[in-house]
Image (cartoon, rainbow, N blue to C red):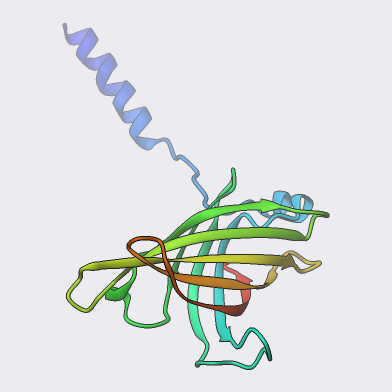
Length: 163
């Protein structure tokens, strides 16, 4: 019994001292060879007039995460965070190694916290040559609970890879 207890104690000590390396970003060599948008990005978004391209509101910041396998999550610094959920969506590589498409959605709430609808966003993205900058343009739709489009618009964004 003492031998088994001693062996288990030694095993737990060894396992407890082992280090596990976990990363949400690709390592430097993978990043430079894969030329991928996978990783975390700090974004600046501008809502624009679809016809003229003129800004309609002050720009706002956000965080975006492009996961391996094509899923996406984001959080926005635009407006009151109580009025919307985080965004969830999908992305894919398009033609070439620098071109991507993205679509995501988030839930919208009123000031009392009641769900009032959702918003959908559709974007095309371009990765810079060095892989550290990302630009996008696209459109969005604001929907009610029944899926009726209440409003729509356009936006652009610039992002820097978080390192």
